Image (cartoon, rainbow, N blue to C red; front, side):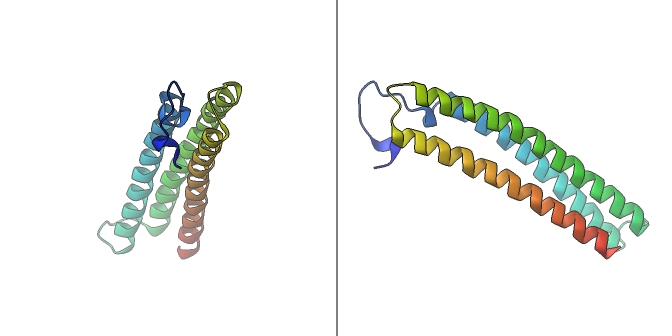
Amino acid sequence: MPVHSRNVKNEVDLAFSDSVYVPESLLSMWLNLSAILITVSLLFYHMSRVKSLKVHPVFASVLAIGFIFISTFYLFSALGPYAARMQYAINKCGNMDECDDIQMKHLNMLYHSYLGVGIITCIIQIIIVYLIVNTV
């Protein structure tokens, strides 16, 4: 039975509390910023390649790669605090009698899924940089 549909009185569910919503929302904001920067980078690079902008290809590549590196830096910088905040919530759950194994598994699943998305996004950004470097 899903965690949110159980009907037990006085039970604390950290997966649906600010202990999890705050770290998730902060990471989400940094993921959005990263997505905006990667979009700007790729749009600028594409416009320079199709000659919509009169920019030297090497300069366009360097600028696009710079935006991608900044985006990746923001994302890596957000993953550390997210991991620490979520570990705090998971440890808090482990120390509470009201927090059962189902909640612990749910919190760990949330932690690993968001961390995985962030890491995969960073890897994709690095692959994009590799592709840009090899097309100039």
